[in-house]
Image 1 (tube, rainbow, N blue to C red):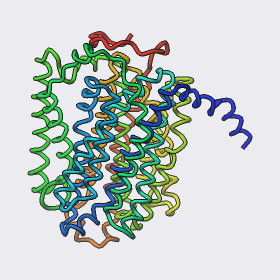
Image 2 (image 1 turned 120 degrees about the vertical axis):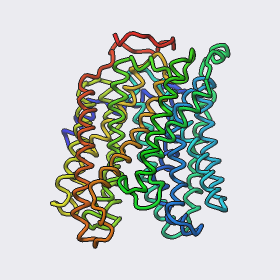
Image 3 (image 1 turned 90 degrees about the vertical axis):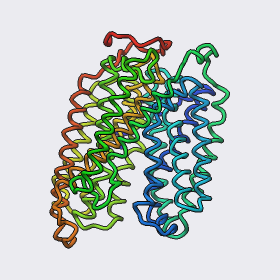
Image 4 (image 1 turned 60 degrees about the vertical axis):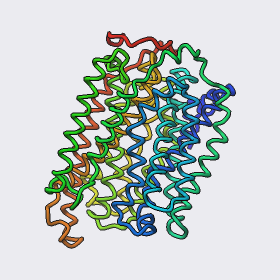
Length: 508
C-alpha cells in the first residue's frame, strides 16, 4: 500500500488532471465529451440485449429483430468520416451538439415504435447521431488541449464509455427481465437529456473560424455517398443476411458473402478513381503519406479488430465450447471491461509526461497474450480462471486506447478533422473486420453436422474453432505491435499548426 501511495504521489495524479479543467472552455469540453460518449456507448453495445424481447413483442424472428441493432452499427460505421467533414465545414462543436440532439430524438422515437420497421428507422437515425458525436468529439478535444495533454484528456471520454457499457449491461438486463424493452430506450433518452444539459455550455466556445474559411471547405457529396455506400456494403458483407446456417461455407453463404465482398471492392475501386481525378477530394489520400500517421492508424485498426473478436468469440467458447451459462459470459466480460474504469487515466498520464515508445507495443502484446491464453487454456482451468486468462488483454486494452487516440491526433496536426474522421473510421472498420474474421474462421473450423450433435459432443469442435480464430487474431495484433515499435511523434509539438493542404513528403 505504501508503494502504491508513493507512486501516486510521484505521478502527481490529481494535480495533473486538475490542469485539464483550468478554464471554463476546457471544463465544458470535458463534460460534453464524457456525457456524449456515455450516451453513445450505453446505446450501442448493451442495446443488443433487447433483440429477443423486441422479436417476441412484434411477433417476428430474432434475425429480423436484430436489424434494430445492425442498422445502428451500419449507419455509425459508414458515416463517421462524412460526419467529421461536416464538422470541418460547419464547426465541430455545432455538429457534435447536433449529434446529441439527433441521437436523443432517435431514441425517443424508438420508445414510441408501433412496428419493427419504425424501430429500425429510428435506430438508424440514432446511429447517425452517434457518428456526429464520435467523429467530432476527437477534433473538439484536439482543438482545446495541447498535444502533451491529450492522453489525459482522452482518458475522460474513454472512461465514460466504459461506464456506459457497464451501466447499460446491468440496467438493461434488469429492465428486460422484469419490465419492458421500451424502458431501455427511455433510459437512453434520459441519458441524452443529461448529455444535452452538460454539453450546452460548449456552444459558447464555437471555433474561431471565419465564414471565408468555412466557405472554402467544399464537400463533394457524390464522393461522400460513394464512400458511405462502400463502407456500408463492407459492413453488410460480414453479416449473415442469407438463408441457412450462419456460415461462410454453405452454398447460401457463398451466394451472399462472395458477391458482397466483390461489390465492396468494386465500389472502393470506383471511389478511388473518382478521388484521384478530383481537384477537391472528399478523402485526400495524400495524408496517408504521413508515415507515422498511417502507422498509428494500422495499429489502431488491429487493436479494435481484437476488441470485437473478444466480444464475438468469448461468449461462443464459454457457452458452446465449455458449456457454461450466459451469466458466466457476463461475468468474464464485465471483469474485462472493468479495467477501463481506472487504467486509461493512468495510461494517458504516462503518455503525456513521458511519451514512451514502449506503451503501444506492450499494450498490443498484452492483448495478444490474453487472447492466446484463453484460446489455449480455457478448457484446462476452472471457471474462475477464465477472467484470469483474459487479464493481460484486459490490462492491454485499457492501456492502449487513451494514448493511441492522442497519438493519431498528434501525428497529423495539419488537419484535425481528417485525423478525427480516420480515427473513428478505423475503429469501426476494425470492429467489422474482427467480427467477420472471427465468425468466418470459426465457421470454417466447425463440421457441417455440428448442429445435429449434442451440446457435449459439439464442445470440442467449438473449442478447436475458437482456438483457430483466436490465434489468427493474435498474429494480426502482433503485427500491429511490430509496427508500433517504430512509432514516434515529434516531442517538439506543443501547439496545433494551421490546417494547410497536405504535404507530399514524409514525416520529418
